[in-house]
Length: 292
Image (cartoon, rainbow, N blue to C red; front, top):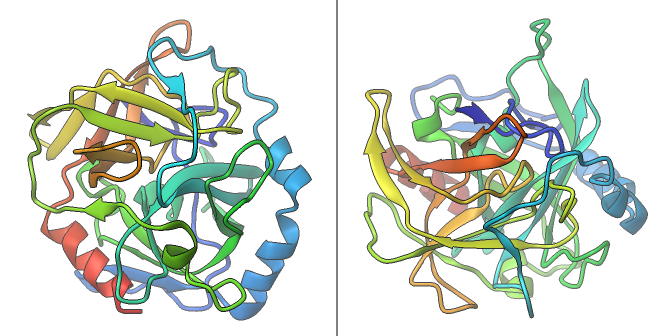
């Protein structure tokens, strides 16, 4: 099993924080990074509609067999999460707005805000980080929101903790929750029934340009390295950070995990996706981000 990578390259380490103004907290609690106002403004300028539409056009991963394009109005709060890797280039994940005190908070995978390193042990940085709720084929019907902070578990590099909260700046005075609505979120839960998974897949079918959906069974596992959820969903890279939704009615549901990593067959089709259980560490991250 390997993590998703640059969205269109599937299943290697992804993303990072963008030019943070504050150094990450090294305490056992959540890791907090902030983004300057100048960097927020630069990100909004950078991501033109043309650049958003272009970032997935070099996809080379085969089309999904199970996942299908989403039809109709986008579910509340779900959107495409853009950034530029250095070294690397433009890329994306998926994120979802959740209820919060500040009405500015979205959940994604921690590897979409903390990068890791290249094969040469060079730390990857990211900048130009924005969230575009209801993104569809170059359009941003709910606006474009720049990130102002990131909060992740201290052990965010491990799959059981692969979730993060991103706190967004308002857009013309409007909070993201007011612009797009939110999905519910739950911690330390084991839902029953089908899971609906949503993501901006980087396959040659979607190229990140529209939302994809799987309706599957999520199976709980403990492999000795931690708990998680596995599904047969076959969305490609770019779906990282996308929600696992319980009790989904086509508009809203309850997030109980996010896409963390997946497996590939010899033809580069995704064979399965895994996500963390989002326990006490995730709950602490959510509480801190919500109040920022």
